[in-house]
Length: 555
Image (cartoon, rainbow, N blue to C red; front, side, top):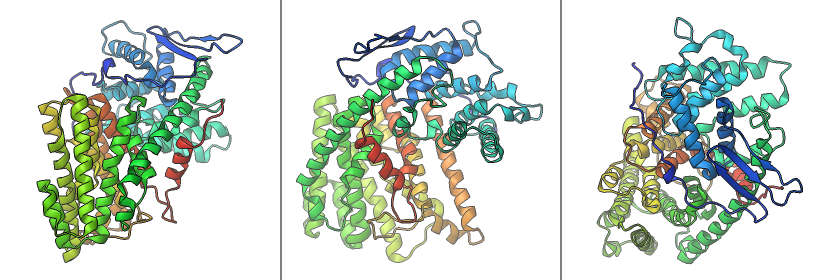
């Protein structure tokens, strides 16, 4: 298959960066300009002014990588954009040279950073590292740092980009063998390689891993041995503690709203997990400026879970059909024949949606009620389809199940609400696209649905059953094993990631950067959200929540 080609375009612009920044303590001032990043510590007896020259192309790339991993990129987005624009100009030959095309680490890191920021860079840049048969040269096996960067770059693979798929297979194979067979490997280096393999930056939720880079002597951040590393670690720690306090306050506000609804008592069959619901909104809208938006987004997230449980474990098929019709028509009077708890659920959904629509209209001048109502109707329709399958014992094809499951995942409901809450690039064009499940929505939804079904454990508090891709695929392909089925699903997840990467690079993509980041963040969070252990618990999520919300960083 021929490799996908795209016009040159940078998706993001500096004026789309988060307009609100966390305010550090008064004894610490962070500032920047186009030629250097600087930290001035007024409280230090040394009055250190940490600065970094941007004359060395590789050092600037390492700098950006470190700033991003420390979660400080929102502070320096204008500077980062200027640096990457310069790198891209050099790359396309508009201005001189200055790049080391023979350094695998430099080439791979530049490739990844540019693609992450919306620039299309051809995978042809790796041709110099391949032999005449089109395979990566075997002598690269000694370049561990370069192979780690190559593996990281391969996560931004596009549909039909076979070279990047081979890059992933080649680099991961050598890196895994290096850890296992090298008896003299340094423990820190081994941990660094293992961390890269398990959590590549692009497909992992980096904000949850910021603390990993706070340790002294971290292998990744100290790769260049420059004095700016320690300074940025200091600032990142301050930022982390300030953000943690803000998130705690947001959780309190959302939990208060949840208790005031009374739904936890009215719907005893449903999950009561306000912390988990808030974490989902935090993941989706992580930038500091979206504090109120996170609180508001947590509300529809809670209703996705409530309605899911109502369909799975409470309502009869007739009752659920009537409930769905009421949502379609957005008509409270149609719920009069339903049990009281279902009437209250619909009324609460109705009021919450209208309230959010009113807030968005007042703030951004666009009433999204039609789009929000449609998203709930589509969700209930998908839940109802699953209910009918289970009620009559029908086994749909795996493809039919997945098509419906993408909608029943609830991802489209979350992203539709997030789009309007962000209030950026709301036009007739974007709203029309939004209402018709574009790939920017369906791709993370597919990733979520398949990851969910790959897990062997149910949600710890959910008693219902609504089938899975594994079951339906094996029913209609009786000659395949469970391992073959899981590999097939893993391949579908990989393809969905490629589609999502493509959407983030698409020419004239009408969606704003913050919305695209929300879509990416959901896909990155999925393995954590469904990382059940044998005890049907979520140890990774629990550990992350504790770290992000309750464990302060010591300065």
